[in-house]
Length: 458
Image 1 (cartoon, rainbow, N blue to C red):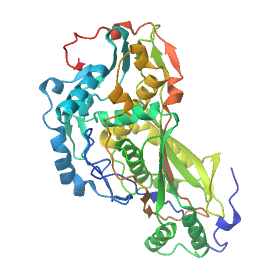
Image 2: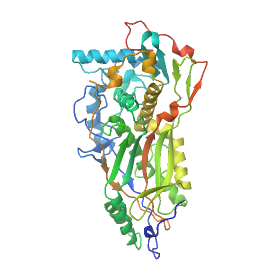
Image 3: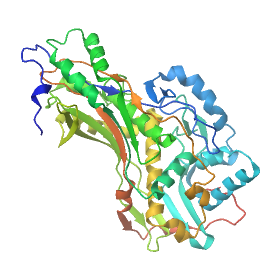
Image 4: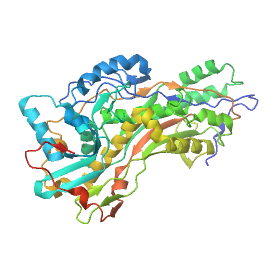
């Protein structure tokens, strides 16, 4: 572990030194910046607010609930009766979905809800290739949808968020780019803010009034910076990343209680035992944790593993110039909290839909990477210019998140202080490189219904 720089230490005669748990208040509630042909994303992501300049702040769900429901309810209304019934394996033809979208464009009609919400699909378990029908098919569990109290469009029975066409388009275009990099978001204190904070910490003799000290810390740090990579920062997909990270950070710092049992805050864990670190930056980030994909011998049936999400951790430190450095190490309490977050993620995603929305985005990124790496559109001879090319099919555009206000929690904890940050990293390319052949997938493949059938079927 790297040694703490001397100019980061408090005065030797300090009776109590604060552990500064600086938290980024992250994104994401806003109306799209302009009208879109493809929409369905609603006006809410994670129940927090963003102003037109990109400055993000937390807004209680109860304040936004009525406005959110009014904004989304119209988009989620009129679920077709045939889609209300839950299905263990609903299949969606991408060729016919493309044709349905093209017809709406030609006739000047808005996309119907069943297209915007991908037929109520909540998970993608299979990608099926049909060269003779020039088609690619996605398959997974699905059901009808409703708008919940958070403003999320979720299944009527399971309350699990449905997948959005808009997010799928963003994932497809990210995978088709020449970069093919990691999809990520991060929130970091500015270099100038860290320099100011270090100078302020040197002036502390005691912790004094915790509220006053916390306020002073927040003022010294100033706004923190948000960085989004791999997808447009203006996309709904990006909003999901930062909103999920926002909720994780508020729970970890004890600024709001976890909505489930068995997930204490990092602050509670730190008070119960030493952190084993000095003047470092405990960093947590969420990442997909997939087992290898499975495929049949011909490469016509691909099975995706069930999506799981893990929380990873590492400690950083800031040098005298306010520059962050990664140490490659962590401490026992940070590891313990990351393990608790990973273990309770499934339960948390049921209580907080944003975590399930993040998992949906991870699934869509994996599907898009699979299509690109294996060149499945070409193998199926499916023509998908709108879905893959994007010409004439723009995705929703929102104000890009840029800055957040710092929020601090101060506590007595030896000669130690901390600033906690986080993020999300999605690297689907490592998963699609791990494939195992299976001899039990043929029954799943089946056949595509007659040419005059609708674009989805159970």
